[in-house]
Amino acid sequence: MPALAYRLLLLDIDGTLRPQGHSVIPAENVAAVRAVQRAGVLVAAATGRGRASVTPKLLNGLVPDHWLCAAGAQVEDAAGRVLHKATMSAAEVDAVTAFCADRGYPVRFTFADGSYAYVGYEVFAAQERRLDHGIGLKDGSARDRHLGGDGPFSAYGPIPRGAAEGFAAQYPGLALRFVYEGSAALAAAAEAASCDILPAGVDKAAGLRALCAAVGIKEGECAAIGDSDNDAGMLRAAGLGVCVAGGSAAALAAADWVCPPAAENGVAAACRRIWPQAFA
Image 1 (spheres, rainbow, N blue to C red):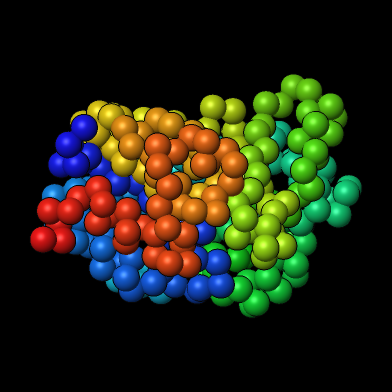
Image 2: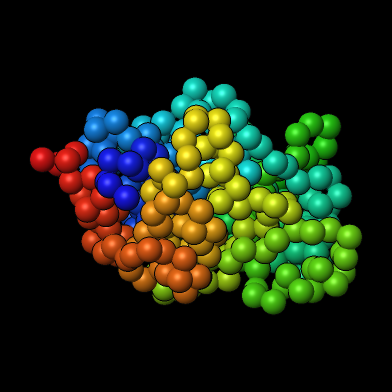
C-alpha cells in the first residue's frame, strides 16, 4: 500500500510517544507528528488514559485531531464531541472496588473529569509524585463518584497477573476484561502488573473502528503505533501496525514491523519511514 494511503495515524502515549522516565513527549516525536499532520494525515492519541488525564504539559505542543482514550472506551474529536463511549455499570464498579479492597490492590477509575482512586489513593499519589505522569489524580475514597451519573470508562491498577481468574470466579455474571501492560520498559520500571480493567467488547481496536466510522476512513487506511498488550488489537486492526522495540510479546506479534524504542524516538523514525514526503 502506498504511504500516502495511510490517512489516519493512531498513537499510544505511554511507552510509545512518551518514553518511560520522561514526564513529557520528547520534542523530536512532537515535531515528526506535526510534520505528518501538515502533510494531511489525521492524528489520534490512542491511550489507556482518560481524556482528562492527557495534559497540555504532557503533549508538549502536540495537538491531536482526535482522541481514542480509556483504551478505546472514550472516543472524541478535537473539540470534545463524543463520537463513541462505553462505560462500566454500577455493579461492575462495586465488584471491582470490593475485589481490590478485600485483597489490598489499589484501583482507580477513569471518569470524564479525571481519575478517581477508590482504593489506595496514597499509593497512586506517591507514584504520581515520583513519576510526574500528570494523570490528574482525585481522591475517590468516598467511592460514590459513579453514583447518579455516567459510570467510568475503565479501571486501572497494579493488580497481580492471575487476578482476572479470581475475579471471574467470584463474579461469574460480569464480563470485565483485565488487560495487562507487558512491555519490557514497564517491567524494568516495576510496573509489569499494572492493567486496565475494561467493559466487555472494549479495546483500542473497537475504538479504532468507531473512529473510522465517524470520520469516514477505512481501517486499512490507518497506521497505528504502540507497545503494549492493550495496543495489540489496534495494531492488528489497522492497515499498518508498528510496535516500538522492547514492546510486549502480544504487541510485537500483532505488528507488521518494529521501529526503534521509545527512548530513541521510535515514533519519529516510524513517521519518516511511513510518510517520507512529509520530511522532504
